[in-house]
Image 1 (spheres, one colour):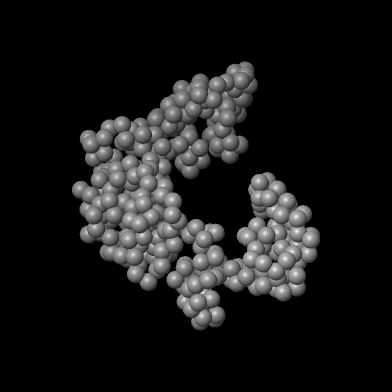
Image 2 (tube, rainbow, N blue to C red):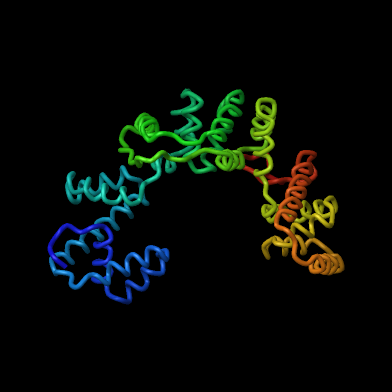
Amino acid sequence: MPQRKLSGKQKAAALLISLGPDVAAQVYKHLSEEEIEQLTLEISSVQKVEGSQKEEILEQFHQIAIAQDYISQGGISYAKEVLEKAVGNDEASNILNRLTSSLQVKPFDFARKADPGQILNFIQNEHPQTIALVLSYLDATQAGQILSELPQDAQADIARRIATMDSTSPEVINQVEQVLEKKLSATVTNDYTETGGIEAVVEVLNGVDRSTERTILDSLESQDPELAEEIKKRMFVFEDIVTLDNRGIQRIIREVNNEDLQLSLKVASDEVQEVVFSNMSERMVGNFKDEMEFMGPVRLRDVEEAQMRVVGTIRRLEEIGEIVIARGGGDDIIV
């Protein structure tokens, strides 16, 4: 291979050649088919890896691996500090630039390692849209704890903003990051970063306590009934039945229509089926399995609709206090 500046693919090919076939085969197990095809094609075009080039590529790989380990331990700021002490400011910047350009480190990485109370103190007086942006990037448990502590009159508004958030420009994210953590050098991509949405607010609400969830949903129902209903549908899915206690599952079995439950279990995981069947009598299990087999092939849409009806029953039973769905906070602890 001639002494020239190599592309990323060429470096990857040279690295695998240098590591040998056994190690390369192990690496291949972690790659997609497309990546394997591209790398194999690149490797096949390499005639020879010069000794100096091999050493340089291995050294770069070693540095990036160490830097990635530092990031996983304490974030980008920690990695930058350690690397600067080890190899100097310029080389540390070069290593992190090479790494973050390929990793595309998620914004607010530092905040996901921070205490929720500290973040709350920092953002509670910010504009609701700014709070929504920050929460949408945090771990769901973190975000749920923070949302629970915000004023009740702001909770529903922020939840709505997370749910309706589509994309945010990298400039805005960068600005908010710098305000939230001046010591962190934000590494956002040039593309608009998607965040928020229904799934994001569902994850956040699943992390709050029951009273906070009820307050937010009640407020959303008066502001945007369709959005509130969509959020409710996704907050507890059929597969979550495995998180309920035996008494709750038995109550559900008595309440729901047998045909709906049979349809719902038709494509359910073994774990879900085992949990449900373990709360039935042997005779009932036998009848259910016979009926499910007798159904033959069923449309996925029919199964999903049946599961939605079962979930609707579960939420209704929870509302009247017949069953308990475990959530964040302390008001759902059973003693």
